[in-house]
Length: 342
Ligand code: CUA
Image 1 (cartoon, rainbow, N blue to C red):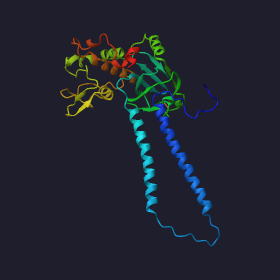
Image 2: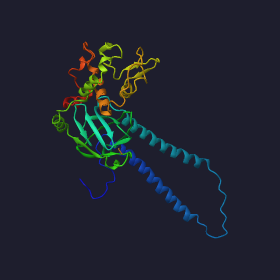
Image 3: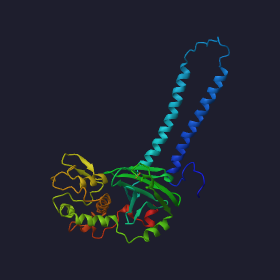
Image 4: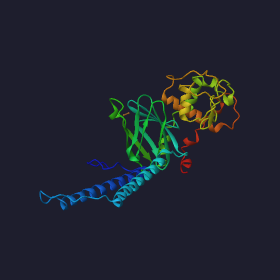
């Protein structure tokens, strides 16, 4: 597998990589064609119309509408094929499928910390199954980093205070490079690792072999209790002082200024670190900020817990945290082969 020379392109190992390569080769092909055509015609004319004696005066040149229209319209059409094709691949890549398995990624000078929804943690390694859609939810504890898997042709900045996502489906088992692609300080070049794509059964073995770890949703529930969130955000508004959180994730929330907002990852994170930014209608600005008290990993765990409250909404709720006394993993985290073969 190791070759003594630098490969022209990285291995192609995701459902996206073939599409990116095809587009790339189209661009290279068009470029080569025009480079050869223009330099060929140029050379031909230079020879054919060379000055043959020192007193020669060129004939006057009249414009040609036909010619000018042609050399405007043809390049325009070619440029538009690049645009349409590029946009199609772009939209495919930036709309994550809804049935993807979620994995949390936190960048930090100078390492990648990864946690699976079943609890497994990894540093600078990412194990994924082949043939399943994976969605990464990523952020950083310090500066901007950039998560880059060349073999999958995917790459995205991770930005402080924000969640960015990437999705992919690996097609070939193997070990692939993982890079940080944004200069982030002294050891930027060492912020590297591997993506290990395994056959689904092997992956399930790998998951099973590391199952002693706490899932993010369970860890998030503990944070929720130790930080005292539970005393205000009771079940079904029971706490009274803060909005109930069950089933809130992914729903529209009406704010006190009359606007409504989708309760996504970014909104929930903001509501924890900067609670006054967007107040839910009917509630006062009484929540203290938790900025600095929770790490980015813990924020992701609290988020996982709030997401896990989704599927429990049909249950009658007793105490605030009762729906999660036995948290079941969110649908996305179902790692059983049956769930994955959809
Ligand atoms: Cu992190 Cu470069």
